[in-house]
Amino acid sequence: MLVIGYRQGADFVKAKSAISKHTMLKPNAILSFLKALENDGQTFSLPDDFVLKDDLKAAGFFIIH
Image 1: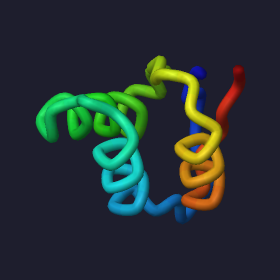
Image 2: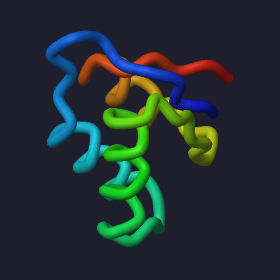
Image 3: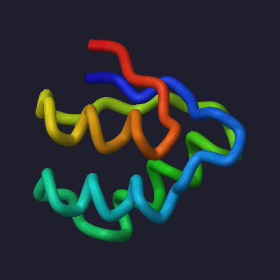
Image 4: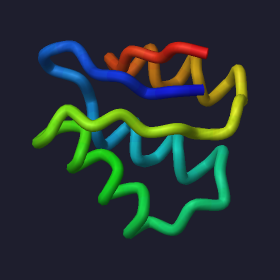
């Protein structure tokens, strides 16, 4: 799945927690992805996981498959 953006007020802490819980990514990599998304509007790809997708959407992030 591809994380393409976020709504105003998105919860980056919840997103970091969800990504950490559902992937094998290291915390530094997760922070790097989230900072690039927030600061530069860069998208990033994550493994397809419907629970992770739901968690990210609930935290205010836009996901495409």
